[in-house]
Length: 126
Ligand SMILES: [Zn+2]
Image (cartoon, rainbow, N blue to C red; front, side, top):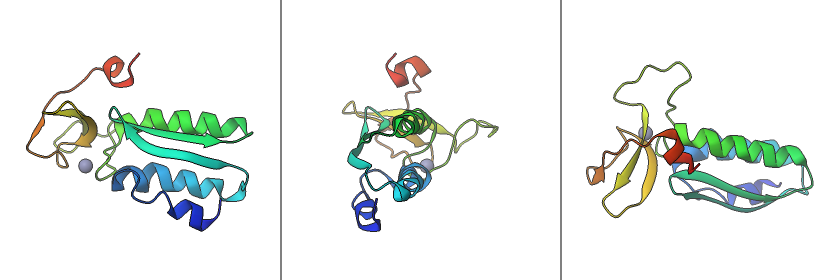
């Protein structure tokens, strides 16, 4: 992946996910020019990445990033879990009044977002 290809995906998701998840992933792909990214977006509150690659580890890495995204604020990158005590800034899934789900910490949530903590099963759709 060239720096130009990498930069194409800047702004595809919020700054928090971009800094913590997407850019490190794309930088890791710099040594693998045959890996092509088909899409990077937020869907139902989680990170979604589609890639074309013959490397099996790429798909595994994407699965891990998508799982981790449920616990990382899309706005600022603050992480929930991993030893952080639950407090004002921890990551929570909120649902806005129009039904969109987003994963943000309480500091990044906007006033019109309805506080609505979902269970892990609801978050991941299993
Ligand atoms: Zn945040």
